[in-house]
Picture (tube, rainbow, N blue to C red):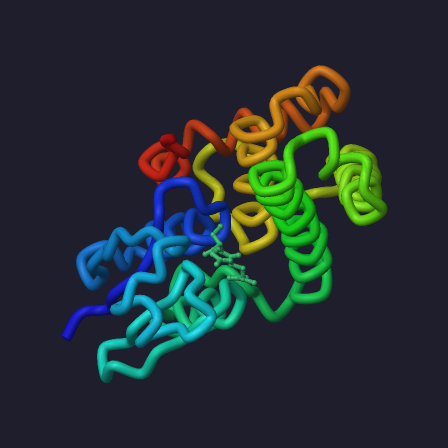
Length: 207
Ligand SMILES: N[C@@H](CCC(=O)N[C@@H](CS)C(=O)NCC(=O)O)C(=O)O
């Protein structure tokens, strides 16, 4: 059996997994199972009782849920390219953590707005904390852009590049009023080089 990924087209978490699968050259081993996680899809719930995407069925039908464990597993499937290189593991995981923080704060903002309305969601205690977290993470990423590995379009990506790259594009997609590309120019230049890469281009968000 091939690997089977449960996903939807607007999930930043699922896109991170897809970009990783493409970068790892796993395209031919992977079936994409498009589902609506909000519709209590029975097949998805069987694989992931949390009813969330992404969820992965392995070739032996073991299921793996949650983005980071799925990424860890995919990275183990091929020797090269390695998304979590041992020699720079702390630095890469540092970036992965910042990127996942941005995805979480962005996604939770979008969902809270959807169910509570934008004004109530953003003015709530948790809403203010999420928006403040987005600002702080963007500032931190901007400050660290110079020290982040330089990228010329051919260089192999590591997991931090992928998570941060998708997180930033998710903000552009769902929270355009944040206007981060105008306010964080170094980060915008860094992101531009990633979005042209095939793995990012072929997985771009569609509503
Ligand atoms: N912690 C999970 C978050 C995944 C997640 O929240 N996925 C959203 C789509 S972007 C979802 O499926 N939500 C459905 C729900 O919460 O019921 C991960 O890292 O994979």
